[in-house]
Image (cartoon, rainbow, N blue to C red):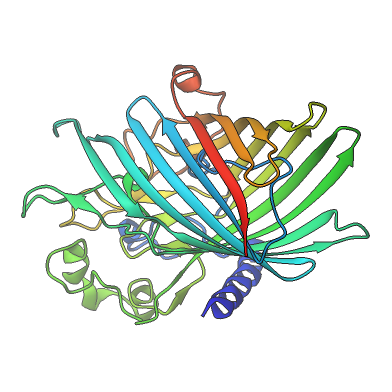
Length: 385
């Protein structure tokens, strides 16, 4: 099962590069309300900001057993949200230079829900298993200083959690959902440079979401209760190509069955680990996240289908990192603080489908600079068997 999913990820990445090069676009404007993207594969700068909860361990670590384990718990705080996450990564080395891993994240999220000003502002919670991730990496180079990796995120987390009364059900914001509803393949290249009393880690990643439906049918079409009521009224008017967005086995772009769209993205980071102090490693770093398209979100109402560009869309983000490893021989402990700095534009009040207004780059939002997106993490590593 897992090798097959990894192969799917490789195929999707190859297709993604060709789509980017060809600039494939959706040219049918007759159903603009049903089309949550302007150019498949993304166009221009934009996208939702990266997650600060993905804290990277920089230090000596602990390896050598049959199975290595890392448990990283994190708390992310903002002005109107609080996210808790525990990520457990189990890994093994089938060969001396190959590493195979499985990450199981458990999340708990609390945030505000007010889709429109005529709704009361209230707090909602969700929690449980998020999207699983399978990863494989290969060390290359004379000293194994380079690392080539492929990560595949599986849509195991629920992405259609809703709240409210029977006839007024509202989907929670995408930030409160446990998953994204799409697969995501990430190709990465990294290098580790050992220097006197320290090490540098430099990495670059290309992320490409895509959709796979093993049943070939959209679970929300013709169920009479959820978002596709509006579509059902016009179903016979759709062409065969247009219907492929709702009934499909594979879509080479990151649109889930609710109409939410996740664009491809590029991430680059650099970290320095200071080993001058015996038994401790202090680490400093920065991560840049640039999506290659504008994220769309489904309508909050569960009875209508009307995806729009994400009004909370962030055109870019930088994550500042500080970490401290207590380099114990058997159970090293890691503490870290991350701070996300990002840019957000205001949506066009006259056109809710306008992507261009959201894709513009701006300086960081000063109101959020100090009060938003702080992540505190605590982790432990061990090796088993």
